[in-house]
View 1 (tube, rainbow, N blue to C red):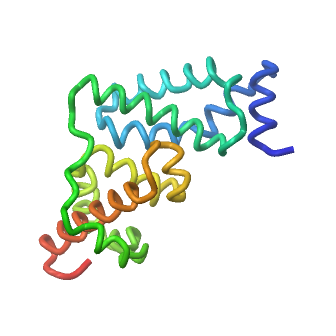
View 2 (cartoon, rainbow, N blue to C red):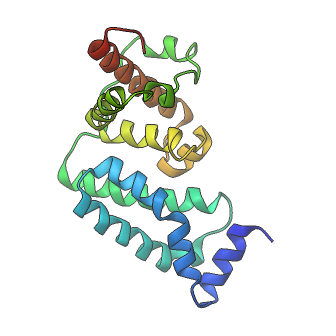
Length: 187
């Protein structure tokens, strides 16, 4: 049996410790999504709790059409998005007019680990990531830290693949520029 299905069925059957296993399995994902969007630890903790409360209340509606990771990620993303909308914070920076032409030629060759090779570069990289708008921070985190595919990110965020690629492109460009400006070399 599929591990997602087994876990969901265990939770729905109210097996002892099943929901705790689900929380342990997906709390990192939930934290990454919400913390990258919200950036306030107290708010992020509350929103993570709200996410798992919503997951518990709605798990009977999960239809196995996507991975459980994507479904829970979508719940976390929706809760964080609603929080940001209430705060009236901008979610992303506007796209550049010539960006679509460039996007087709950009691959995934940007290596965040290589960019973090030394401690000073890592500090500046993390500062540059924190300076990104919430949506771009979140997409970048899902892609590089959670190793979610473009399709999984689309399921989580509800954004089109091209929009996700655009956010990744702009995020990587801003990170490269920040590192190049700081260290004077191409990142």
